[in-house]
Image (cartoon, rainbow, N blue to C red; front, side, top):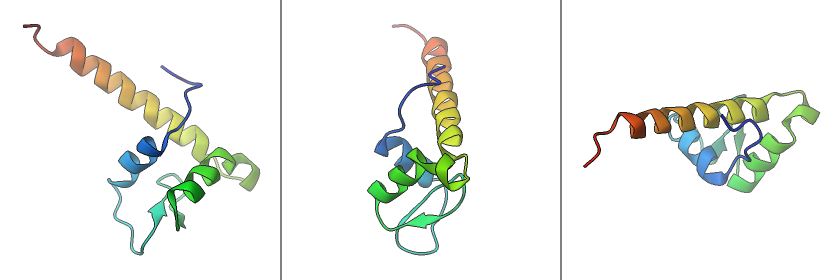
Length: 80
């Protein structure tokens, strides 16, 4: 697992696509706050511990789970 891997905009978008947002913007799927730009939600995630949230931990764990699932799917895929 990549415990120290950075969270990318692609990771944020992938997570947010699974959650409908009631208004325009991007939702942090950890704390459910909505932000006007991807940059603002990424900044929020990076500094979430200063705000009393654990969003960075959530996204890191989510990314690690996705990577594990991806690796398992690759290992299970038949080799041609």
